[in-house]
Length: 453
Ligand code: GLY
Image 1 (cartoon, rainbow, N blue to C red):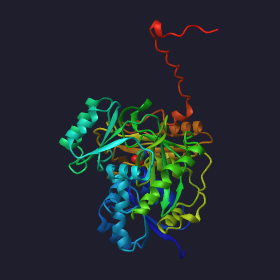
Image 2 (image 1 turned 60 degrees about the horizontal axis):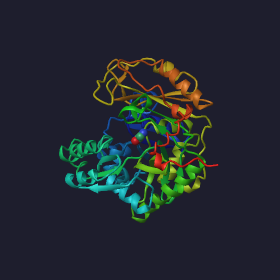
Image 3 (image 1 turned 90 degrees about the vertical axis):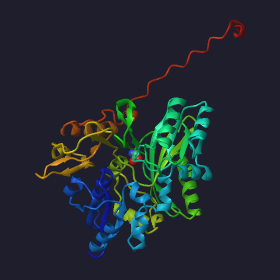
């Protein structure tokens, strides 16, 4: 067919498996490649090419050899390193922002200053390039803070602090001991810690046009009840009912519109997926961070529900024709993704554990198992190859049914050390505990009002 196009997806996580799986279903898709991909992409008829996502020269060569018509870049690293620019310079069509625009994720200082400039609601903050001035500022705050290394630090450069002492220690770790790398820790952002429910809102962006996708909720902490250290994401569901239609309209006008226009005005227009990580505080929504890419595991739950042709959509973004779409079509059924992890993750873990039960889980109705850290061993068995191993994703007529199906599928899968959260989607399913109103303070007798009437 004349207008079939070959597509190359860059990355090897669950997000890239979900994108490649959806792209492969497009009637316009020719060959779909993934660099480097995982065992799941290979099983779904995608051709894995063993090239590092940051090796622009080799990726350019493979695009020429395989007549690739669209490159879709998944992770933030190659975007922040300028992969989209390098490919475009060779005339290759790309879905993903330029290096300049990707600074919205690659530099916390850049993102916060841009938010301030565009009047996007975010936490109060200050920027420091010296540990002593940061310590002085922290000791004069009367609220808990978050300390963020400026640069990318494999998702680890953000320290949420309960006390001033913890914050001072975080400054020491980031700036003095350079635990997250010398470059990432050269400057820091210290900001007021936000309280509230978290929600992820992603939008496709091209020039002045943007199309928000249904809101999702991720689960960052490793253990149930949001306990334990943060991870890349232990599971997600979509749509997140906490993001009401009114909230989504508010986010369009107070977050997406101003930031996208500010980027365009400053001559680094955004093209790709802009991901707003938000806190819904008592004072209204506040942007915690922007990411310059699809989320992981948000993409798994989104792709499960997407009905519009993904290839058409991503190409329209790359061609600056997104205004042709008034809407994107979604399956009305909610989706839930449960991430299965290697023993020890998010700390140290070992790879190479044989995984069983994937085919049985995949065979359940409404279930798709997206691979992340997996590969084939020399006996062609699927084995673990990363911290987050699989994203077991299910659709259901209700959110409760999607959750039940996802966990039914999880029960069929085993590997040594496997762990996962058991409460994905509970925030939307279980009513929040009613907090009794605080006892009125006991006032000394002279302040008590005399009884009236
Ligand atoms: N799920 C959070 C992220 O993709 O950064």
